[in-house]
Length: 474
Image (cartoon, rainbow, N blue to C red; front, side, top):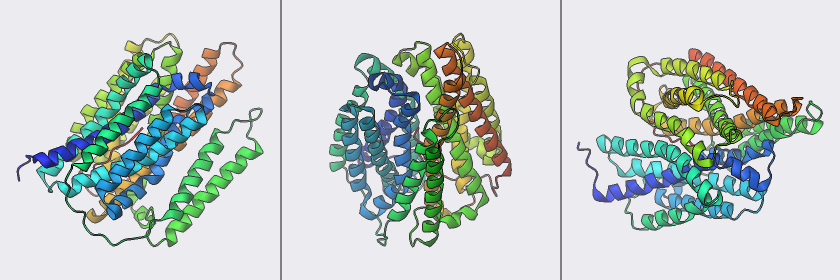
């Protein structure tokens, strides 16, 4: 079958790829702008992580709802709804007058993205024939997703330095409107009729509440170096609510997260590895941004500093399938987790005198290659022993675990950093701050070691690189 894409399908592909591009780009632009946002709203370091956490938390929890909604309500309609929510939330973020307002708008942005991404992927699956055309379409879709992350660091730096951080949110509004108008003129294949099923709202509410309570509890400041009764109570409540979520999923007719799939060892280990990976990857990018700010980097300079990381990730995702066919996802995971752990420990030595060229750049290039390959191996590993008709569900679960790792993991690492900084009896504020970064990155390296151990334990019956096109936001 020819891989030539028709004009109508090409127009559709451009629309869905751009939809993903702006949402992924927005995530990286906001990371670069964090120091400016912190200054604008006089935010404490422990609260700043919520700018990132609120987005990935709602994205994770609504992701599987987005997939179900696109099947029930129509992919094109749900994509338009998702883009509308994303654009309106962006406008709200641009107009924010305080940090709570901005964090709330970021959470709503996550809901919009959670509706948009599954719908965009479903439109490709439903409109491109199986074989070369669909593979080519998903290849372009994935490349533009990775490209959005890389472009975001530069766009974020330029706009923050020239027009201010609010321009990052304003930019999404006209782009979203243009994409919505474009969708009005796109012709899509009719969706396959599906049996209308009740959405697992109780499961959604319980997992969202449980993770939120846990993240909030972890983020609560310590009192005189120890946990307060309120913090302990919040953590216990969060755990109990997540236990309730598991009980709901056991009895739900159409569970948000089918627990029967967790009997597959490769899926379980891959999901936990993915959770740990997104924790330390989100963490090291967050702390690197704050580190560059302490060094006096402008937003543009910070964006340029991150560019090698993004570019190498794009390159490696194109060649990782070859290595997995040759060596298997398990071996790729083992090698990459060793590299990731060493990278975290290397970066934990950051100080005010280190050279970017000699210290940061080599680490970013190697980590870009390793992390890009890691995520590809995690996705493939999570579905390789799953029945082909359940790849979609398994893929949705692994992406959910990735995003939950970003929200919960970042909260843990940010708490470690602020606790160490606050307890450091040092006159120099920069030195105390760096001690916190060091501690968080050492914990990140430990997360990578745990992921390495799990990679050794992971199952896997084959070296097949199953095609599960998922975009990972961070």
